[in-house]
Length: 208
Image (cartoon, rainbow, N blue to C red; front, side, top):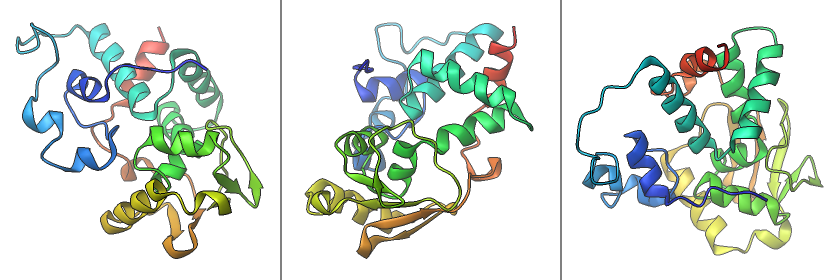
Protein backbone atom coordinates (compact mmCIF):
# COMPACT_ATOMS: atom_id res chain seq x y z
CA UNK A 1 0.00 0.00 0.00
CA UNK A 2 1.35 3.45 -0.94
CA UNK A 3 2.36 5.74 1.91
CA UNK A 4 3.65 9.26 2.35
CA UNK A 5 7.11 8.80 3.83
CA UNK A 6 7.97 12.50 4.15
CA UNK A 7 9.15 13.58 7.60
CA UNK A 8 6.09 14.59 9.61
CA UNK A 9 7.58 17.79 11.04
CA UNK A 10 8.69 18.93 7.57
CA UNK A 11 5.10 18.54 6.38
CA UNK A 12 3.84 20.82 9.17
CA UNK A 13 6.55 23.39 8.46
CA UNK A 14 5.75 23.30 4.75
CA UNK A 15 2.12 24.17 5.46
CA UNK A 16 3.01 26.77 8.09
CA UNK A 17 0.80 25.32 10.84
CA UNK A 18 0.41 22.32 13.12
CA UNK A 19 -1.13 19.34 11.36
CA UNK A 20 -0.91 17.18 14.52
CA UNK A 21 0.96 14.33 12.82
CA UNK A 22 3.30 13.45 15.72
CA UNK A 23 0.99 12.86 18.67
CA UNK A 24 1.99 14.41 21.99
CA UNK A 25 5.03 16.12 20.47
CA UNK A 26 2.69 18.52 18.66
CA UNK A 27 1.41 19.76 22.04
CA UNK A 28 4.88 20.35 23.48
CA UNK A 29 7.58 22.99 22.99
CA UNK A 30 9.49 20.41 20.92
CA UNK A 31 7.09 20.95 18.03
CA UNK A 32 8.95 22.07 14.91
CA UNK A 33 6.46 24.89 14.27
CA UNK A 34 7.27 26.36 17.68
CA UNK A 35 11.00 26.31 16.94
CA UNK A 36 11.16 27.01 13.20
CA UNK A 37 7.95 28.52 11.92
CA UNK A 38 9.01 28.70 8.29
CA UNK A 39 9.07 26.23 5.38
CA UNK A 40 11.99 23.77 5.15
CA UNK A 41 14.82 24.24 2.68
CA UNK A 42 17.42 26.92 2.02
CA UNK A 43 14.81 29.34 0.64
CA UNK A 44 12.27 28.64 3.37
CA UNK A 45 12.62 32.00 5.10
CA UNK A 46 11.96 33.99 1.95
CA UNK A 47 8.48 35.42 1.57
CA UNK A 48 6.85 34.09 -1.59
CA UNK A 49 3.52 35.40 -2.83
CA UNK A 50 1.35 32.56 -4.11
CA UNK A 51 -0.89 32.79 -7.15
CA UNK A 52 -4.54 31.82 -6.85
CA UNK A 53 -3.73 28.39 -8.24
CA UNK A 54 -0.77 28.06 -5.87
CA UNK A 55 -2.97 28.86 -2.85
CA UNK A 56 -5.57 26.32 -3.98
CA UNK A 57 -2.93 23.64 -4.50
CA UNK A 58 -1.32 24.29 -1.11
CA UNK A 59 -4.69 24.02 0.64
CA UNK A 60 -5.42 20.72 -1.09
CA UNK A 61 -2.01 19.38 -0.07
CA UNK A 62 -2.54 20.54 3.51
CA UNK A 63 -5.89 18.76 3.86
CA UNK A 64 -4.43 15.61 2.31
CA UNK A 65 -1.59 15.66 4.81
CA UNK A 66 -3.88 16.28 7.78
CA UNK A 67 -5.98 13.22 6.98
CA UNK A 68 -3.17 11.11 5.52
CA UNK A 69 -4.91 10.57 2.18
CA UNK A 70 -3.08 10.12 -1.12
CA UNK A 71 -4.07 11.97 -4.29
CA UNK A 72 -6.22 9.32 -6.00
CA UNK A 73 -8.19 8.56 -2.84
CA UNK A 74 -8.64 12.26 -2.08
CA UNK A 75 -9.96 12.95 -5.58
CA UNK A 76 -12.36 9.99 -5.28
CA UNK A 77 -13.62 11.34 -1.94
CA UNK A 78 -14.12 14.77 -3.48
CA UNK A 79 -16.16 13.35 -6.36
CA UNK A 80 -18.42 11.53 -3.90
CA UNK A 81 -18.82 14.73 -1.83
CA UNK A 82 -19.69 16.65 -5.00
CA UNK A 83 -22.50 14.19 -5.76
CA UNK A 84 -24.07 14.65 -2.35
CA UNK A 85 -26.66 17.28 -1.55
CA UNK A 86 -25.48 20.35 0.32
CA UNK A 87 -22.23 22.29 0.33
CA UNK A 88 -19.50 20.29 -1.40
CA UNK A 89 -16.64 21.55 0.76
CA UNK A 90 -18.48 20.76 3.98
CA UNK A 91 -19.45 17.30 2.71
CA UNK A 92 -15.81 16.66 1.83
CA UNK A 93 -14.63 17.43 5.36
CA UNK A 94 -17.45 15.39 6.89
CA UNK A 95 -16.48 12.38 4.77
CA UNK A 96 -12.85 12.72 5.81
CA UNK A 97 -13.87 13.02 9.46
CA UNK A 98 -16.11 9.95 9.12
CA UNK A 99 -13.20 7.71 8.12
CA UNK A 100 -12.56 4.91 10.60
CA UNK A 101 -8.92 5.90 11.19
CA UNK A 102 -9.88 9.54 11.84
CA UNK A 103 -12.67 8.67 14.28
CA UNK A 104 -10.37 6.19 16.07
CA UNK A 105 -7.86 9.05 16.43
CA UNK A 106 -10.55 11.43 17.70
CA UNK A 107 -11.53 8.84 20.31
CA UNK A 108 -7.93 8.54 21.49
CA UNK A 109 -7.24 5.04 20.20
CA UNK A 110 -4.06 6.37 18.60
CA UNK A 111 -1.74 9.28 19.41
CA UNK A 112 -1.95 10.44 15.79
CA UNK A 113 -3.98 9.58 12.71
CA UNK A 114 -1.08 7.53 11.42
CA UNK A 115 -0.94 5.50 14.64
CA UNK A 116 -4.73 5.07 14.68
CA UNK A 117 -4.55 3.87 11.08
CA UNK A 118 -1.98 1.29 12.09
CA UNK A 119 -4.19 0.06 14.94
CA UNK A 120 -7.07 -0.31 12.46
CA UNK A 121 -4.92 -2.16 9.92
CA UNK A 122 -3.77 -4.59 12.60
CA UNK A 123 -7.36 -5.57 13.46
CA UNK A 124 -7.32 -3.57 16.68
CA UNK A 125 -10.72 -1.88 16.28
CA UNK A 126 -14.22 -3.35 16.33
CA UNK A 127 -17.13 -1.53 14.67
CA UNK A 128 -20.49 -2.60 16.10
CA UNK A 129 -18.81 -5.74 17.41
CA UNK A 130 -17.17 -6.72 14.11
CA UNK A 131 -13.51 -6.36 13.15
CA UNK A 132 -12.91 -3.76 10.44
CA UNK A 133 -9.38 -3.22 9.18
CA UNK A 134 -10.08 -0.70 6.39
CA UNK A 135 -8.93 2.81 7.46
CA UNK A 136 -11.14 4.51 4.86
CA UNK A 137 -14.31 2.70 6.07
CA UNK A 138 -17.10 5.30 6.32
CA UNK A 139 -18.84 5.34 9.69
CA UNK A 140 -22.48 6.25 10.20
CA UNK A 141 -24.11 8.07 13.08
CA UNK A 142 -24.60 5.69 16.00
CA UNK A 143 -21.75 3.32 15.10
CA UNK A 144 -19.92 1.98 18.16
CA UNK A 145 -16.13 1.59 18.12
CA UNK A 146 -14.25 -0.57 20.59
CA UNK A 147 -10.63 -1.59 20.99
CA UNK A 148 -10.26 -5.33 20.44
CA UNK A 149 -9.48 -7.42 23.52
CA UNK A 150 -5.98 -8.26 22.37
CA UNK A 151 -5.12 -4.61 21.70
CA UNK A 152 -6.34 -3.21 25.04
CA UNK A 153 -3.05 -4.15 26.69
CA UNK A 154 -0.94 -2.17 24.23
CA UNK A 155 0.86 0.60 26.07
CA UNK A 156 0.67 2.99 23.12
CA UNK A 157 -3.13 2.78 23.07
CA UNK A 158 -3.35 3.29 26.83
CA UNK A 159 -1.02 6.30 26.64
CA UNK A 160 -2.87 7.82 23.68
CA UNK A 161 -6.26 7.38 25.36
CA UNK A 162 -5.00 8.95 28.60
CA UNK A 163 -3.64 11.98 26.72
CA UNK A 164 -6.83 12.38 24.69
CA UNK A 165 -8.98 12.15 27.83
CA UNK A 166 -6.90 14.85 29.47
CA UNK A 167 -7.25 17.20 26.48
CA UNK A 168 -10.95 16.42 26.00
CA UNK A 169 -12.88 14.72 23.19
CA UNK A 170 -14.75 16.40 20.32
CA UNK A 171 -18.48 16.95 20.66
CA UNK A 172 -19.35 14.50 17.89
CA UNK A 173 -17.98 11.44 19.73
CA UNK A 174 -18.90 9.93 23.09
CA UNK A 175 -16.04 7.98 24.68
CA UNK A 176 -15.91 5.63 27.67
CA UNK A 177 -12.16 5.57 28.29
CA UNK A 178 -12.34 2.85 30.96
CA UNK A 179 -14.10 0.49 28.56
CA UNK A 180 -11.94 1.46 25.56
CA UNK A 181 -15.18 2.18 23.75
CA UNK A 182 -16.85 5.08 21.99
CA UNK A 183 -19.88 6.08 19.91
CA UNK A 184 -19.72 8.15 16.74
CA UNK A 185 -22.72 10.38 17.35
CA UNK A 186 -22.85 12.27 14.06
CA UNK A 187 -20.71 13.88 11.40
CA UNK A 188 -19.26 17.15 12.74
CA UNK A 189 -20.69 20.47 11.66
CA UNK A 190 -18.40 22.90 9.86
CA UNK A 191 -18.20 25.25 12.87
CA UNK A 192 -16.79 22.37 14.95
CA UNK A 193 -13.80 21.90 12.63
CA UNK A 194 -10.67 24.11 12.46
CA UNK A 195 -11.22 27.50 10.84
CA UNK A 196 -7.73 27.30 9.33
CA UNK A 197 -8.99 24.75 6.79
CA UNK A 198 -10.22 26.55 3.66
CA UNK A 199 -12.05 23.83 1.81
CA UNK A 200 -13.54 26.36 -0.60
CA UNK A 201 -10.13 26.62 -2.28
CA UNK A 202 -10.16 22.86 -2.93
CA UNK A 203 -13.62 23.15 -4.49
CA UNK A 204 -12.33 25.98 -6.71
CA UNK A 205 -9.32 23.87 -7.70
CA UNK A 206 -11.33 20.80 -8.72
CA UNK A 207 -14.07 22.87 -10.38
CA UNK A 208 -11.75 24.14 -13.11
